[in-house]
Length: 217
Image 1: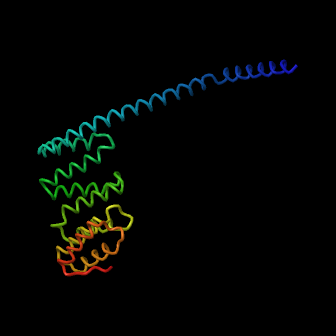
Image 2 (image 1 turned 45 degrees about the horizontal axis):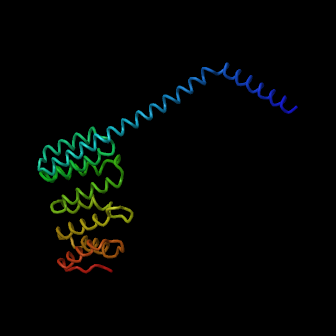
């Protein structure tokens, strides 16, 4: 008896499925095609991105070889092209290398290029901070203390990844310009931060000895 009821249930289900198909067959086919096209489009995009990344990697390596061969002008041009046309992972990296190569022949222009990177929120705060520090390294021997302070002081906060380098650069700039109060401020901050790297402490000890200062501990 139960077999009869089961057969009836199956017949009812088949009839309902048939009615559903007759009513909505166009929509079902359209949805199926949409899924196929979406999957195909994603795979095509993924293939294109991988291809572009591989091409960008080869172009970046070629530009590095030019730089290592002393062909700075050609290297800068290659990095510049990659910064414009490369895959997303290589564009910022190429801009950093372009700035580095430019700084070798024109420090002021190199610092300007790093400043542009430091102002570009699109690359993320960590890379922005790195660019600001690299620019500061170029300018530390020549720029006014006020300019370096404006560039680097925001990077000295406890949550910034390059704070130790930024503090050291500001201490050095203050010492160079004879601003004892500013130098003492940075000496103290470096000395009292338990996370200050040993190398930075050693260099600051030398600088404090030269300046006749004693840091707060």
